[in-house]
Length: 313
Image 1 (cartoon, rainbow, N blue to C red):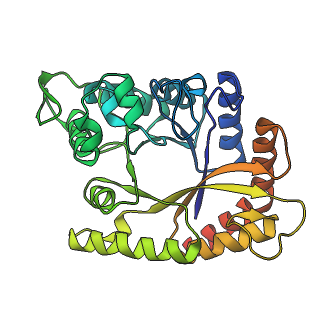
Image 2: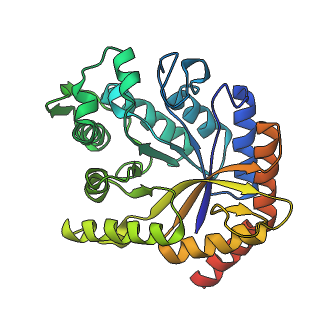
């Protein structure tokens, strides 16, 4: 199993952008496999889920490029980019440059849309009502930009361009890996057909195993080998000082309890955990995340890395 960290690149972290960069460099040095940044272009001031435009994330494509130039080994991904917010030619061009800066370490993670954000930007309602179809089309346009050997051309229902110069190409061939998030049947079909990684929902291990089986069945119906599409999951990892007894949330407890949960998720089909780290009872979100990262690196990473080396021997 591989491990990444969701970088809290939001003003409400609170984490100034230079602190975000420092955390990413620390993750690179500690041996984590990936670091992920979030996306919102212009959230309305009030959102039904409590988010607001005041705490919108830093622009992710700019942040990805900064991380690419300041890290050496770690993969850098978007979690998750809302493709219809940007013209696909712009997204493709910016991520190609970041991939070149990083030496081929960029992952395009993409997900759904927020209706309120699209409305605030006066974008067509169809981009939300038919978001899976729109995302599929935008992704195909991006891949055209990345892989064409000459000028790029694309004609679709939501986006079209012709004779667009699309050079230089990304370092990773044939293109940077694509991760598709979503738990709906439509999202899983999109992942089966277009993705290199599938981001499954955070649910208890038994439910997770059932979801992975469903996704693998979809892959087989699409004549895709499920082994070609690793399964990842975004989840909070919360460490406690004392063992948690009775009913407890998955991935919450002492390092030993979190370790046991990870073993269950591994048997359920999880290949890559992207964690939102924290320490129970810690009032400062920033220091809580850093302490949890350090504890995970000291107590859990070495055992899994040893197992990975042993399995490859």
